[in-house]
Image (cartoon, rainbow, N blue to C red; front, side, top):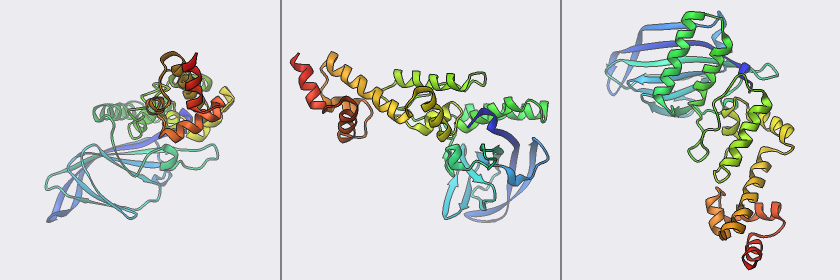
Length: 288
C-alpha cells in the first residue's frame, strides 16, 4: 500500500446520552457532534470506518459477533456492513468516528484484511492515537481538502495504532514520505539484520513502511532477489551457524533463542539453507 493509496475522508467527534433506560441496556440519542468532512462524497465509498471509544461502554453486534467495547477499544467496519450499537452506560457515551478510504491499484476499496486490522482491536498507545486524531482534526479545520498527502500520512500513523508490530518484532521505522520504495525496503533489511533473533511477521513489516503485504513482498524480491520469508530464514540460519562457531551454542538453545516456532521448524530451515543438520554442523564445529 503506497502512502498515496489512502486518504482521510471524514472524522466526527460524537457524544450520545442515554434515553428510555431499560437496564442493563439502554438506547441512546446523539445530542452533539463535530463533523469534519474531506469532500462531498458518498459515505459508502469509505474503506473502513473506525469507532474509537473515549467514554462509556457500547454493546456491539456485528455479523455473529457480540462484544462490549470500552475506552480506547476500536470497532472497525467496512463499507456496507451492518452493525448495532447499544449503550451500556447510564452516563454519556463518546467516541471518535473516523472514515478512511483506501484504493488498490485496480481501483477497488481496501478491506480490513488489506489494511491488516480486525473487527475489534485496542489502541496500542491511546495518548499517541488521540494526539494523531487531534492533528487530523486541526488539519481538516485549517486546510479543508488541501494538503491531502500530509493527512494521508497521519491516517497511516493512526492505522498503525491498530496493528502495531508485536513486542518481539519491534518497530522498524517511522514512515517517511520522502523515502523511495527501495530505501524503505532497505530499512526493513537493516532491521532484519539487527533483530534476526526476533520472530517476524511479513504483514507487520509491510505495514510498518506503508505497504500492502503483497506489494511489499513483490518489491522486496525485486530489490533483494528473494522473498522476505526466504531472506529472514536464511539470515537466521547464517547467524545460527555463526553462533555455533563463535559461542558453541547447542542447536536446541539456538532454536529457542532465534525465534523459531519449535525445534522442528529450526531443523528443517537449517537443513535447507546450510545443507546439513544442526547437530552435524555443531559437532563438526565443536571438534575444531
